[in-house]
Length: 231
Image (cartoon, rainbow, N blue to C red; front, top):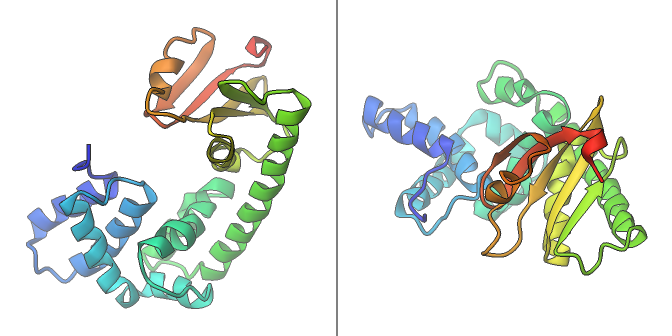
């Protein structure tokens, strides 16, 4: 529903209750909560989510670790669009390609990893572009156009950290649900993105007995299966 908070929003709301609304630490925590709220794509029609994002944007440039990123990456226009399309992807690139600890240590002020994060994000963009081109060629080569869902086996061609990003791009471009798989040892692991109000990914995946694991929500999910079970 519209009133759902993301994990960061829940943590911030709890901190408000525990610390009191005027505690100075909240001006830092609300910046992180705002980034998480936008990045997790929870509804900004919610008054509480909108309050968190508005307050976070107000204090964004006062929070040293984030200010360093904004200055070094030459990010302008401090708004929710900037968070969703520039700041959050830059932070997330660390976990996608190496380790989320890189971003964590930067955000808590333990290390200045600004340049490292920007470099990883550039690599993430390149890998996503190359992977998207491969996926689109796969769709044409395997005559998937017209299918209600695109299932793409990228094997070892696409970095696992960007599978979800590419699945999202494919779904948005072709208006169909998509599953993008990559090979890891003897398993295929990947990401799914749903299209349409009648599609609930985890409900669909729950009916697939060959899956080893799956998890997620209505519009996005992760899954794994044995390579021999792909056909």
